[in-house]
Length: 153
Image (cartoon, rainbow, N blue to C red; front, side, top):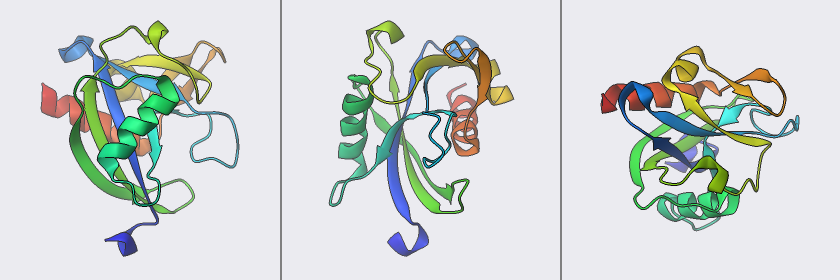
């Protein structure tokens, strides 16, 4: 299957609440032009290490990036799609409850953490307190969140 994509990532949809009041944890990526989707609100997670499976990678990435792993994580969906530079990425989307306040998380990567509402996701933007402006979400993350919301309700 590796011939169908250039890299594989494991990322987490972490949420609080339910229904229309549900909020989703997003991480504002750094404004570094050489990274994928710089300055965008995205999920926590990242590339699999050589020989690592997605289940292990998502836990490792969450520990590294925010110092938190939910009590239960389950694979929501796998999808192959492009990044803005045209590379094909296999994304393993996991879902789990965020059972602690955002203030209890460690920001070890990125500029800021925030909770996106269903309305934020529908419009594709979330306000950055740090930058005092709306910042976009990568289209694949937004689409997966919309699919997740539709399947949960």
